[in-house]
Image 1 (cartoon, rainbow, N blue to C red):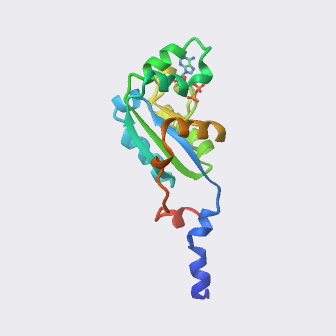
Image 2: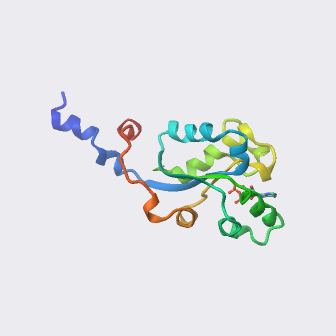
Length: 169
Ligand code: ADP
């Protein structure tokens, strides 16, 4: 039988806090908002066990949209992509949790919705690549860059999620 202190340590916040808690920039694009998918998308990340640490609705400026997608500046679809994103609104979010960057991309699906597995967000809701509903950071470096681009330091909430001890062992 576990003593009180041993039982307490199993559920202590430091146990799950020691898992790698990374952050990802997740953004519902204008098509996702006009399609009424905000609640569904948030629900998926929340139900998975991830923690929402920042969220805002905004119409991004062309400058912000250009910077966000600057790695694609030489691609033929870049001007249309920037115009589309800045047609707004978007829901910009930061989600935190173990492996949220890589696993968040799995939940989102492939860039081309028709190549996405059913059960993923793009697989369930999208058809065309230029209307693929959602963005998710693809690496630790891009997550850091994107979070700094879209949010100020004071806009990220730091807190322990009450359910954390039931998600992490
Ligand atoms: P992802 O969003 O899956 O990380 P990319 O970084 O390759 O994909 O592309 C960024 C965004 O540019 C895509 O989400 C999509 O909206 C758009 N895009 C990519 N490829 C094309 C294309 N061939 N035609 C039109 N839009 C594209």
